[in-house]
Amino acid sequence: MVVVVVSGCGGGQATPSAKRSSAASASAPLALRLASTRPLPAPVQLPAVTVTGAGALSIAGLDAAESSSSQIVLIDSGGARAVGQLPVALHDGAAASVEGQAYYFGGGGASGASAAIYRVGPAGVSVAGRLPAGASDVGAAAVGGRVYVIGGYTEVVPLRTIVAFTPGGGARVAGMLPQPLRYPAVAAVGGRVLIAGGTSGQSAQQEILSFDPRSGVVHQIGTLPQPLTHAAGAALDGRLLVFGGRGSERTSQRAEILSIDPATGATSYAGRLPQPLSDMGAASLGGEVLLVGGRDRRGAAHDRALTYRPAP
Image (cartoon, rainbow, N blue to C red; front, side, top):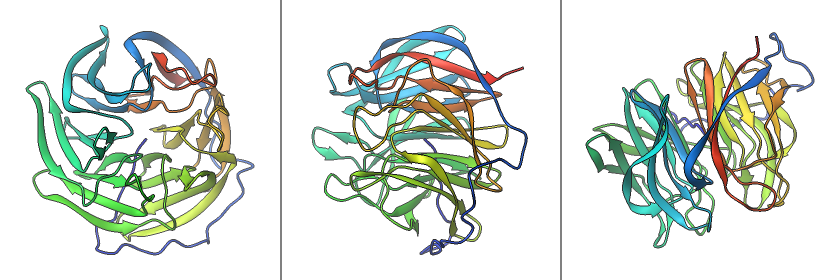
Protein backbone atom coordinates (compact mmCIF):
# COMPACT_ATOMS: atom_id res chain seq x y z
CA MET A 1 0.00 0.00 0.00
CA VAL A 2 1.46 3.49 -0.85
CA VAL A 3 0.45 6.98 0.26
CA VAL A 4 1.42 10.57 -0.22
CA VAL A 5 1.03 13.85 1.51
CA VAL A 6 0.91 17.50 0.64
CA SER A 7 3.93 19.72 1.13
CA GLY A 8 1.85 22.74 2.15
CA CYS A 9 0.10 23.21 5.46
CA GLY A 10 -3.60 22.44 5.42
CA GLY A 11 -3.56 20.81 1.99
CA GLY A 12 -6.24 21.26 -0.65
CA GLN A 13 -9.87 20.39 -0.52
CA ALA A 14 -10.96 17.35 -2.45
CA THR A 15 -13.18 18.05 -5.41
CA PRO A 16 -15.85 15.79 -6.88
CA SER A 17 -14.86 16.88 -10.38
CA ALA A 18 -12.64 14.88 -12.72
CA LYS A 19 -14.74 11.77 -12.05
CA ARG A 20 -14.53 9.71 -15.22
CA SER A 21 -15.83 6.44 -16.58
CA SER A 22 -13.89 3.29 -15.70
CA ALA A 23 -15.08 1.41 -18.76
CA ALA A 24 -11.92 1.73 -20.84
CA SER A 25 -8.32 2.79 -20.43
CA ALA A 26 -6.73 5.51 -22.51
CA SER A 27 -3.47 3.58 -22.69
CA ALA A 28 -2.68 0.09 -23.94
CA PRO A 29 -4.03 -2.63 -21.60
CA LEU A 30 -1.58 -4.22 -19.19
CA ALA A 31 -1.66 -7.99 -18.69
CA LEU A 32 0.24 -9.60 -15.80
CA ARG A 33 1.55 -13.11 -15.30
CA LEU A 34 2.59 -14.91 -12.15
CA ALA A 35 6.37 -15.23 -12.51
CA SER A 36 7.34 -16.94 -9.25
CA THR A 37 6.07 -18.23 -5.93
CA ARG A 38 8.26 -18.74 -2.89
CA PRO A 39 7.51 -19.82 0.69
CA LEU A 40 7.64 -17.41 3.61
CA PRO A 41 9.13 -18.37 6.99
CA ALA A 42 5.59 -18.23 8.43
CA PRO A 43 2.07 -17.28 7.31
CA VAL A 44 1.34 -13.55 7.58
CA GLN A 45 -1.38 -11.06 6.77
CA LEU A 46 -1.23 -7.25 6.83
CA PRO A 47 2.58 -7.03 6.57
CA ALA A 48 4.25 -3.77 5.54
CA VAL A 49 6.52 -4.27 2.52
CA THR A 50 9.20 -2.00 1.08
CA VAL A 51 12.28 -2.35 -1.12
CA THR A 52 15.87 -1.59 -0.07
CA GLY A 53 19.22 -2.15 -1.74
CA ALA A 54 19.44 -5.61 -0.17
CA GLY A 55 16.00 -6.75 -1.37
CA ALA A 56 12.44 -6.43 -0.12
CA LEU A 57 11.59 -6.25 3.58
CA SER A 58 8.32 -7.59 4.97
CA ILE A 59 7.78 -6.05 8.40
CA ALA A 60 5.40 -7.15 11.19
CA GLY A 61 1.76 -8.12 10.47
CA LEU A 62 -0.59 -10.74 11.91
CA ASP A 63 0.55 -14.35 12.25
CA ALA A 64 -1.45 -17.56 11.75
CA ALA A 65 -3.10 -17.10 15.16
CA GLU A 66 -4.03 -13.48 14.28
CA SER A 67 -1.55 -12.16 16.85
CA SER A 68 0.66 -9.16 16.11
CA SER A 69 4.17 -10.01 14.94
CA SER A 70 7.50 -8.21 15.30
CA GLN A 71 9.29 -10.27 12.64
CA ILE A 72 11.29 -8.66 9.83
CA VAL A 73 11.73 -10.88 6.73
CA LEU A 74 14.18 -10.25 3.89
CA ILE A 75 12.99 -11.45 0.47
CA ASP A 76 15.62 -11.63 -2.26
CA SER A 77 16.90 -13.98 -4.97
CA GLY A 78 17.92 -16.44 -2.26
CA GLY A 79 14.41 -16.78 -0.85
CA ALA A 80 12.70 -15.39 2.25
CA ARG A 81 14.26 -15.46 5.70
CA ALA A 82 13.83 -13.74 9.07
CA VAL A 83 16.54 -11.12 9.68
CA GLY A 84 15.36 -9.18 12.72
CA GLN A 85 12.52 -7.89 14.87
CA LEU A 86 10.78 -4.65 15.75
CA PRO A 87 10.95 -3.65 19.44
CA VAL A 88 7.23 -4.44 19.76
CA ALA A 89 4.78 -6.67 17.90
CA LEU A 90 2.58 -4.69 15.49
CA HIS A 91 0.21 -5.08 12.55
CA ASP A 92 -1.54 -2.74 10.06
CA GLY A 93 1.49 -0.44 9.84
CA ALA A 94 3.11 0.77 6.61
CA ALA A 95 6.63 0.87 5.22
CA ALA A 96 8.51 2.94 2.67
CA SER A 97 12.14 3.59 1.75
CA VAL A 98 14.08 6.81 1.17
CA GLU A 99 17.52 6.53 -0.47
CA GLY A 100 17.62 2.81 0.30
CA GLN A 101 16.71 3.22 3.98
CA ALA A 102 13.51 1.53 5.15
CA TYR A 103 11.06 3.10 7.60
CA TYR A 104 8.05 1.57 9.36
CA PHE A 105 5.10 3.74 10.40
CA GLY A 106 2.43 3.27 13.06
CA GLY A 107 0.59 -0.02 13.42
CA GLY A 108 -1.66 -1.57 16.03
CA GLY A 109 -0.46 -3.63 18.98
CA ALA A 110 -1.25 -4.77 22.49
CA SER A 111 -1.04 -1.21 23.85
CA GLY A 112 -3.10 0.37 21.05
CA ALA A 113 -2.18 2.33 17.94
CA SER A 114 1.51 3.19 17.70
CA ALA A 115 2.83 6.64 16.77
CA ALA A 116 6.42 5.41 16.39
CA ILE A 117 8.41 5.69 13.17
CA TYR A 118 11.16 3.05 13.07
CA ARG A 119 14.27 3.03 10.90
CA VAL A 120 14.86 -0.58 9.82
CA GLY A 121 18.23 -1.67 8.47
CA PRO A 122 21.10 -4.19 8.60
CA ALA A 123 22.41 -2.60 11.80
CA GLY A 124 19.08 -3.08 13.54
CA VAL A 125 15.99 -1.04 14.34
CA SER A 126 15.93 2.45 15.86
CA VAL A 127 13.32 5.16 16.48
CA ALA A 128 13.39 7.80 13.72
CA GLY A 129 10.46 9.96 14.80
CA ARG A 130 6.79 9.99 15.71
CA LEU A 131 3.52 10.48 13.88
CA PRO A 132 1.25 13.29 15.12
CA ALA A 133 -1.10 10.59 16.46
CA GLY A 134 -0.98 6.84 16.89
CA ALA A 135 -2.44 5.16 13.81
CA SER A 136 -2.92 1.68 12.39
CA ASP A 137 -4.47 0.79 9.00
CA VAL A 138 -2.17 3.29 7.23
CA GLY A 139 -0.30 3.25 3.94
CA ALA A 140 2.99 4.92 3.05
CA ALA A 141 5.22 5.72 0.09
CA ALA A 142 8.28 7.81 -0.68
CA VAL A 143 8.06 10.73 -3.10
CA GLY A 144 10.90 13.19 -3.64
CA GLY A 145 12.85 12.31 -0.51
CA ARG A 146 9.81 12.33 1.78
CA VAL A 147 7.54 9.58 3.00
CA TYR A 148 3.83 10.27 2.93
CA VAL A 149 1.42 8.52 5.28
CA ILE A 150 -2.30 8.52 4.62
CA GLY A 151 -5.39 7.97 6.71
CA GLY A 152 -5.51 5.27 9.34
CA TYR A 153 -7.27 4.48 12.58
CA THR A 154 -6.57 5.65 16.15
CA GLU A 155 -8.35 2.60 17.63
CA VAL A 156 -11.25 5.03 18.27
CA VAL A 157 -11.86 6.93 15.01
CA PRO A 158 -10.65 6.68 11.39
CA LEU A 159 -8.41 9.49 10.16
CA ARG A 160 -8.52 11.99 7.27
CA THR A 161 -4.97 13.19 7.77
CA ILE A 162 -2.16 13.08 5.23
CA VAL A 163 1.18 13.24 7.05
CA ALA A 164 4.58 14.11 5.59
CA PHE A 165 7.74 12.63 7.11
CA THR A 166 11.22 13.86 6.18
CA PRO A 167 14.09 11.71 7.51
CA GLY A 168 15.88 13.86 10.05
CA GLY A 169 13.16 16.52 9.88
CA GLY A 170 10.16 15.06 11.68
CA ALA A 171 6.51 14.49 10.72
CA ARG A 172 3.63 16.91 10.34
CA VAL A 173 0.04 16.99 9.14
CA ALA A 174 0.23 18.32 5.59
CA GLY A 175 -3.17 17.70 4.07
CA MET A 176 -6.63 16.20 4.45
CA LEU A 177 -8.55 13.51 2.62
CA PRO A 178 -12.17 14.17 1.59
CA GLN A 179 -13.28 11.65 4.20
CA PRO A 180 -11.68 9.35 6.80
CA LEU A 181 -10.04 6.34 5.16
CA ARG A 182 -8.51 3.05 6.26
CA TYR A 183 -6.98 0.22 4.20
CA PRO A 184 -6.86 1.89 0.74
CA ALA A 185 -4.72 0.60 -2.13
CA VAL A 186 -2.19 3.35 -2.83
CA ALA A 187 0.84 4.00 -5.01
CA ALA A 188 2.81 6.95 -6.32
CA VAL A 189 2.50 7.17 -10.11
CA GLY A 190 3.96 9.91 -12.29
CA GLY A 191 4.56 12.31 -9.41
CA ARG A 192 1.03 11.92 -8.05
CA VAL A 193 -0.50 9.56 -5.54
CA LEU A 194 -3.39 7.36 -6.56
CA ILE A 195 -5.67 6.09 -3.78
CA ALA A 196 -8.22 3.39 -4.58
CA GLY A 197 -11.01 2.13 -2.36
CA GLY A 198 -10.48 1.58 1.36
CA THR A 199 -12.84 1.73 4.30
CA SER A 200 -14.51 4.83 5.72
CA GLY A 201 -15.86 3.56 9.02
CA GLN A 202 -17.13 0.05 8.24
CA SER A 203 -18.11 0.17 4.55
CA ALA A 204 -15.83 -0.55 1.57
CA GLN A 205 -15.41 2.43 -0.77
CA GLN A 206 -15.34 2.69 -4.57
CA GLU A 207 -13.64 6.03 -5.30
CA ILE A 208 -10.30 6.43 -7.08
CA LEU A 209 -8.52 9.59 -5.91
CA SER A 210 -5.48 11.40 -7.28
CA PHE A 211 -3.38 13.60 -5.01
CA ASP A 212 -0.95 16.19 -6.38
CA PRO A 213 1.73 16.94 -3.76
CA ARG A 214 2.73 20.12 -5.56
CA SER A 215 -0.68 21.77 -5.32
CA GLY A 216 -2.06 19.87 -2.35
CA VAL A 217 -5.27 19.10 -4.24
CA VAL A 218 -7.13 15.78 -4.25
CA HIS A 219 -9.42 14.94 -7.19
CA GLN A 220 -11.69 11.97 -7.70
CA ILE A 221 -10.70 10.63 -11.12
CA GLY A 222 -12.69 7.42 -11.33
CA THR A 223 -14.67 4.64 -9.71
CA LEU A 224 -13.72 1.02 -9.07
CA PRO A 225 -15.94 -1.70 -10.60
CA GLN A 226 -17.14 -2.51 -7.07
CA PRO A 227 -16.47 -1.27 -3.52
CA LEU A 228 -13.10 -2.61 -2.41
CA THR A 229 -10.98 -2.47 0.74
CA HIS A 230 -7.98 -4.30 2.20
CA ALA A 231 -6.47 -4.53 -1.33
CA ALA A 232 -2.75 -4.16 -2.09
CA GLY A 233 -1.51 -1.35 -4.32
CA ALA A 234 1.72 -0.96 -6.32
CA ALA A 235 2.94 1.03 -9.31
CA LEU A 236 4.08 -0.65 -12.53
CA ASP A 237 4.47 0.67 -16.09
CA GLY A 238 2.94 4.02 -15.14
CA ARG A 239 -0.24 2.55 -13.64
CA LEU A 240 -1.68 1.81 -10.24
CA LEU A 241 -2.20 -1.94 -9.85
CA VAL A 242 -4.75 -3.11 -7.29
CA PHE A 243 -4.40 -6.72 -6.13
CA GLY A 244 -7.23 -8.68 -4.54
CA GLY A 245 -8.96 -7.10 -1.56
CA ARG A 246 -12.51 -7.60 -0.36
CA GLY A 247 -15.86 -5.92 0.12
CA SER A 248 -17.34 -4.89 3.45
CA GLU A 249 -17.72 -8.54 4.51
CA ARG A 250 -14.61 -10.20 5.96
CA THR A 251 -15.16 -13.32 3.82
CA SER A 252 -15.64 -11.53 0.47
CA GLN A 253 -12.04 -11.75 -0.79
CA ARG A 254 -11.45 -11.25 -4.53
CA ALA A 255 -8.83 -12.58 -6.96
CA GLU A 256 -8.90 -9.85 -9.63
CA ILE A 257 -5.94 -7.64 -10.44
CA LEU A 258 -7.04 -4.19 -11.61
CA SER A 259 -5.01 -1.69 -13.61
CA ILE A 260 -5.82 2.03 -13.22
CA ASP A 261 -4.79 4.69 -15.72
CA PRO A 262 -3.57 7.75 -13.74
CA ALA A 263 -4.56 10.19 -16.51
CA THR A 264 -8.19 9.10 -16.81
CA GLY A 265 -9.01 6.95 -13.79
CA ALA A 266 -10.08 4.22 -16.23
CA THR A 267 -9.94 0.71 -14.80
CA SER A 268 -9.20 -2.53 -16.68
CA TYR A 269 -8.53 -6.12 -15.63
CA ALA A 270 -4.86 -7.10 -15.67
CA GLY A 271 -4.97 -10.67 -14.35
CA ARG A 272 -5.90 -12.87 -11.39
CA LEU A 273 -4.35 -14.10 -8.17
CA PRO A 274 -4.04 -17.87 -7.66
CA GLN A 275 -6.84 -17.57 -5.09
CA PRO A 276 -8.98 -14.76 -3.62
CA LEU A 277 -6.90 -12.83 -1.08
CA SER A 278 -7.03 -9.62 0.90
CA ASP A 279 -4.55 -8.02 3.34
CA MET A 280 -1.39 -8.59 1.27
CA GLY A 281 1.72 -6.45 1.41
CA ALA A 282 2.98 -5.16 -1.93
CA ALA A 283 5.98 -3.33 -3.36
CA SER A 284 7.32 -2.53 -6.83
CA LEU A 285 10.71 -4.07 -7.51
CA GLY A 286 12.13 -3.04 -10.87
CA GLY A 287 9.81 -4.33 -13.61
CA GLU A 288 7.76 -6.53 -11.30
CA VAL A 289 5.52 -6.44 -8.22
CA LEU A 290 6.11 -8.49 -5.08
CA LEU A 291 3.06 -9.59 -3.05
CA VAL A 292 3.53 -10.93 0.47
CA GLY A 293 1.14 -13.01 2.57
CA GLY A 294 -2.57 -12.21 2.72
CA ARG A 295 -5.86 -13.55 4.09
CA ASP A 296 -8.16 -16.00 2.33
CA ARG A 297 -11.93 -16.47 2.59
CA ARG A 298 -11.54 -18.95 5.45
CA GLY A 299 -9.66 -16.34 7.47
CA ALA A 300 -6.32 -18.14 7.15
CA ALA A 301 -3.09 -16.24 6.67
CA HIS A 302 -1.21 -16.91 3.40
CA ASP A 303 2.36 -18.30 3.52
CA ARG A 304 3.69 -17.34 0.07
CA ALA A 305 5.40 -14.43 -1.67
CA LEU A 306 4.21 -13.96 -5.25
CA THR A 307 5.99 -12.08 -8.04
CA TYR A 308 4.01 -10.65 -10.98
CA ARG A 309 5.48 -9.35 -14.24
CA PRO A 310 3.96 -7.97 -17.45
CA ALA A 311 2.98 -10.79 -19.79
CA PRO A 312 5.16 -11.02 -22.93
